[in-house]
Length: 507
Image (cartoon, rainbow, N blue to C red; front, side, top):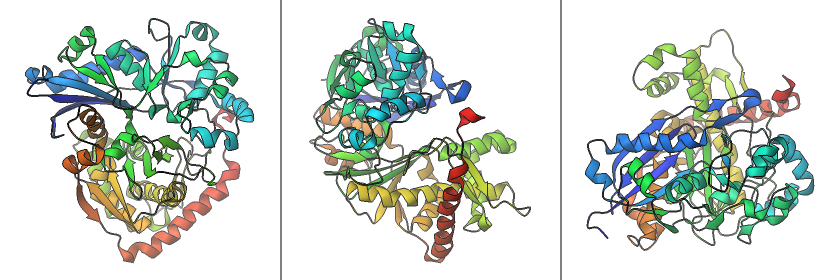
C-alpha cells in the first residue's frame, strides 16, 4: 500500500452530494459539495435522472481536488453512503430504465394497501423492522412499477437502491449492503436474508435484487473510466458503505446500548443501538440492521425538520436570501421571541408523519396566530416544533430499544445552531451534546473503510480517535413549565385535527 493513503467518501443526500477525503487518523483533509434539484411532478412525485448522480458526484469531486490533483492520486479506497429508499430499475447492462423514484416519493400508497392486507404489521414488523407498508417503501415502489409501467418492468434485471447504483457506476457490479436494505420492506433483518414471501406477493422475483454484503466489504478496484472522471487513482478499491443515518450515528459513537443520537437536517432522525429491541412495542418504530453485526438500530425518522425552515426562508424571507448566513440570522431573530412563542404552535408535518405513527395525510398547521405576531414568531414556532417532535420520539425510541439515556448526542446542520440546541434541551429537559465534528455521515463512511483496511481494530477505537463531544447544552429549568404546557397542547392540536386531515388526492 502507498505510504500516504487516503479514503474518499461520497455522500449522496436528498438534494446535494458531498465528497470528502480522510487521512489515516480520520482527519478530514478536503471536502466539497454540489447541490442538485429534484424533479417534482404531479401528486407529489419526486424523481431524478439516475445518470445525473454520477455527474453531480464528478462535479463535487472536481471542486474538492481543484489545486490538489496529487491528493486524488493517493486515494486508496472509496466508501459511498446515500439516502435510503430511493429506487432505480436497471436492465441487464445496468442501464437505468426510468428516473430514480426518490425516497420521499409516496406514489405507491395503493400498492402498500394491497400488499398490506397479506403482510400486516404483526407479520411484517418482527421480520423486517418496517412497522407498516407505506407508499415510500421500496417494495411498494417496485410493485408500482410492475403494475403501472409494464414495459419498464419487463426489461428490469435488478431493482437498485441509490447506494447500489453508485456502487454499480464505480465497479460495474450489482451489489448492495445489509444495513441499506433494512428499510426496503423486502429484507428479513432477523434471519439475514431476502424476504422472498413478500417479494413474490408483490409480483417480483428474488433475482430482481442484488447480492447483499456487510458494510466494509471490498468489491475490487474502481473502473478505469470512473477513476478518470473522479480524478483519482485507478488503484483505489471500492467498499460497501451503509445508509447515511446509521453511519452518521456511528461517527457520533452510537455503537453501544444507552447512546441516543439525533440529526437535524432536511429531516430529523433519532437513533438508538440495541441488542434486543422490542418488536412487540406498540410504537413499532423502524428497526435497522446495525453496522455492527449482531446488533440493531432503532431509527425513527421525522420527515420534516430543517426542510420547514428552508421552506420559510425561500417563501417569506427574500432579503435574508440575499445575504450571508441566513439561517444564523433567522435563529437569532427567533431567540428574541419568548419560549413558547406566545402560544404559536406549528404542526411541522409538511410531508405527513412516519413516526411515532404513520399518517401520510397529516399536514403543516400554524395554530394560535394573532395580529400581534410576525415572521419571527413563526420562525420560533418552527424551531420549537422540531423540539416537540424530538421529545415525543425520545420517549418512544427508548421503549423500543429497551434503553435509558440521560443525554442526546447531536449532529448534522441543526447541531451548529446554539439557539436550536438550547431550545431542544429546554423542551426535552435533557442534556444535548454537540459533537466536535458535526458532519458525521462522511466520517462514518470513512470509519467503515478505515476499519475494513485494518487502520483501526474496531469502530469504538475509530470513534475515540476521531470525534468527541464539543459542547454540552444543559436544560434551563425556568423554561420547563412553559414547554410542558406547549408540548401538551402540541399533542392535543394534532389529536383534534387528525380526523379532518385529508389525502392530497382529494384536492
